[in-house]
Length: 85
Image (cartoon, rainbow, N blue to C red; front, side, top):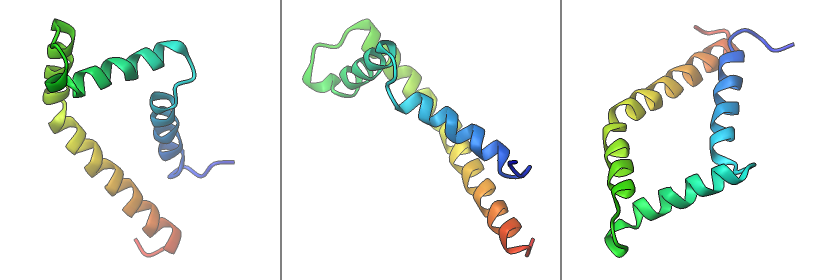
């Protein structure tokens, strides 16, 4: 069985892996579109690239919160493993 403090971490890692690993053709096209958006200075910029660039720019603050949450969960797990929390 999975311990209660580890279960949210397992679900989070599974969601990250499902996003990163291209199991289906749709995810490959997602990464291709993202590469065109990141390479916009070297290519002709379309509406799609500008729209996705705006979404990425707007997601900086939530991604900072996500990084803080991951750090918080890992530090809590460290205390749980050492029984020093």
